Figure 1 (cartoon, rainbow, N blue to C red):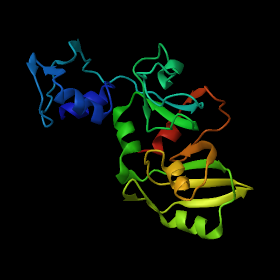
Figure 2 (cartoon, rainbow, N blue to C red; figure 1 turned 135 degrees about the horizontal axis):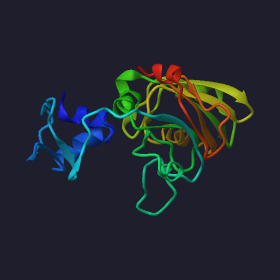
Figure 3 (cartoon, rainbow, N blue to C red; figure 1 turned 90 degrees about the horizontal axis):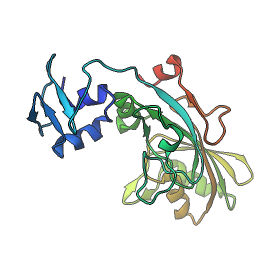
Length: 228
């Protein structure tokens, strides 16, 4: 098994983060520093990260649905000292959020110790859908709805087609099939529309359900199977 995949399987980090650790010279195998991505870990090898031995047995992976409140950073820590996702999971081992919700947005965020699952949920080729409830400062015109559905250019990139439906006055349900940074807010900005509230209610078939801000629940095997 490749070293970065081995680290992800052992819950050390996502595969991408594991690759960064390898490049930064933080990983040794049998006492030898390894910085190449293709290194193969054999049975019986001793793998250390930052001087700590990584157990050879794969730990039991945990994945949670978390209601990220507004004003919380979608990361394990924040250099500016703001509240982060990890503050809600203290003492529960190494967990990291899958994807992001910006500081002002709220709703469903998946948090996991499974690096392979994290990769499947964030890599573009898997096309996992995400459903949002969006409240705006004005009603979108029919031609604006059509434009958004077909895709618009933000940050030099044309977005994939989306689904958008009116759910009330100045209230829309939007389904994305990619995860661009602050995508909905930037799309609305192009039209001169302010997003007053943005709530993510579903990711890849997993629903926020009855969770309240700051609450979480462990996913069932059936829900996790949706990602496989």
